Amino acid sequence: MSNKKNKNKKPSGCGCANIPISVILLVLGGGYWWLNHQGGFAAISQLLPENLPIAIPGLNSTPAEVEPSTPTEPSVSTTPSLPNAPILQPSNQQASPTPETPETPLVSQTPAKKKAIRGIYISRYQITNNASEDKIRAEVRHYHSQGINTLIHGVWGNACTMYNSEVMQQTFDYKSCPNEFRDRWLDWLIDEAHKHGMEVHAYFEKGIKIDENSPIFDLAIERKWVVPGVDRTYPGVEHYILDVEIPEVADFFRDILVEFVQKYPEIDAVQWDDYLGYHAELPGKVDRTNKLTTFSQSMITAMKQANSNVSFDLCHHNPYWAKKYFAADWEKWDVDRIFIQAYNDKNFTAELDYVEKYDGIAISDEQLHRLPEIVANTKIKGILVFPKEDNPKDTASKLKQFSVK
Image (cartoon, rainbow, N blue to C red; front, side, top):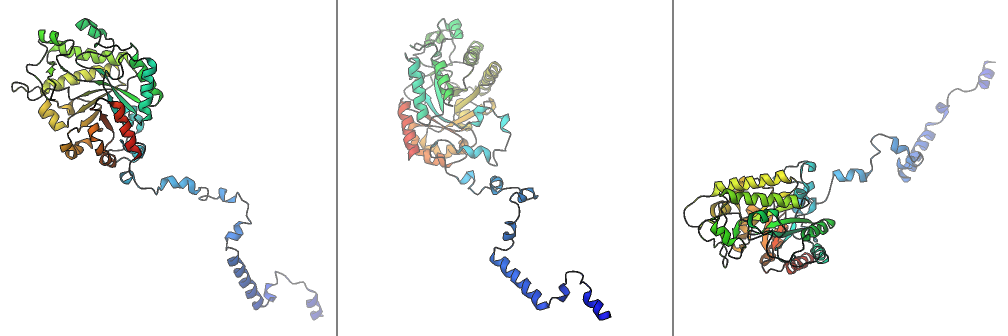
């Protein structure tokens, strides 16, 4: 009976204990072989729902999202300049500041300071003479097509303005330089430039210097507004310097600059150059450095109070030469940007040490062969080109040809 009951009893569990060990090993080995030939555990993932990995922590980031934090391209310091912008450093340098330029929030910088410059100088008579609105706008578009992003256009020279000025009228009883300009020529130029993302910097040519062709020359001599002696800094031109230590002269320049930035509030910057200085070879051992600093600071402060959006720029000699030979201690003037003149090819390499510390370099069209080394130097923020042959269009064309090469 007992044997019969045992035969009718149903087995419990899976019954694995009744399976021979050889069979178990055979099943395990076959499963292992199948997984290896089907791609391992990757084959199992194919049987899971497609959206399952998204819900698993740590697996919801794609390679495309991670890639920007681990760039593989060379850093800016080893990247050559952009082929279409031969005279400024690559635009992505702002994203990778060098140790000399600590990173600061972009919102604290003015648009003018964020933008590297490819600028060309245009003398005050090269566009303005009897130029229609269509001609002026076409000129701007032409320079834009040549890769220029900044026009540094003359608005002042020889102690007179290239626009109708109430300050000139009240001071000298005439309103502008002798010229056939249209009253709104500068409005048209600024408007067209801004349409193309370009900047316009008002160039105060000759600064505080005049020559015998100035309409106020005789009056300045009569009023004793000039420093005794002749400034022969540049061969072929005898300049006389208006003495800004005289209150009436200082007030005149201050009022001119304030009037200009109020009359043209959309101008991006004003720029003065080494003609804001006293040449060291003037008669007498007179140190005018501190007086020139006081004048410049006062003029810049008044301009900023009238229109704080306008940048005050200076294109001058390096600080050593400027102070020693032009009484221009411009490091104390509180200028917004400074561009170092490097017109002397013999001292060019030495000048680059100064250029790298400031906002850019100014070269002449006779130094275009220097562009490769300038472009390769990523510490140079921008370049201004001065057409010595009085043909800015030709110079701009050469720049474009160079960029193609």
